[in-house]
Length: 252
Ligand SMILES: [Fe+2]
Ligand SMILES: [Fe+2]
Image (cartoon, rainbow, N blue to C red; front, side, top):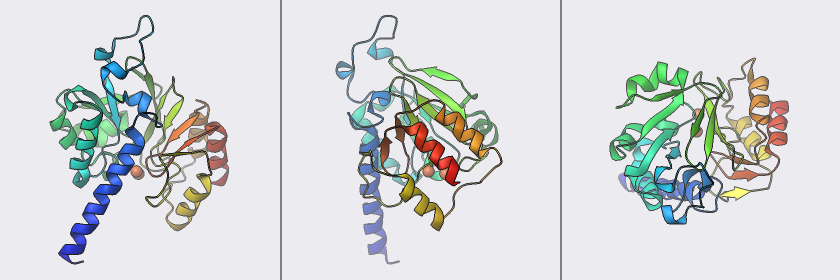
């Protein structure tokens, strides 16, 4: 590939990354409530007994590739100052999930990686410039206005260390690589079919480990009865996500 084409392909990858980040982090979109989009003044009023906005522990989920870090950093900074970022969580140890982890930890001095116990033990504890927070299956982190729960999901779709976060107030499942839809033209959120496109992707490149425990793991995720699936790759999906997860388990 020529240097010119390489530069143009990097720029278009940056543009796609910015668009994808906006899709996940803009106000009114699938993950905006969890990520506390906007400044403190724009946050909803706190119910009694809940931390005031300045004590909200703002997380981000998935760092993206290391080479895309400048675009991700700038996009986060449009939502909140990086020195207010508290958690950098991700589904599993893989370059697109956490490739820019150390760059993000360097730019966000209060932030700490949060990942599965297996991920912390096998990879992140050694790689990260600060010790990660290992999360056990079912462990909760209170963020102020919201609360997330970690669910171990070994080998679903892949990776011994794999797991997902769910948010109980918005009933959002941050489902990482599940329902991966190829291409960069999806809307930020849809109620249209995503299982068909993700199965077409899997037919071309099966990224599932197909472990004996896969069906039970997907049922565990379905039992949280999510209303929004915040997919890492492709459009987020709104609807009866428990039903869609069970349909996924059937076709695997
Ligand atoms: Fe992955
Ligand atoms: Fe991914």
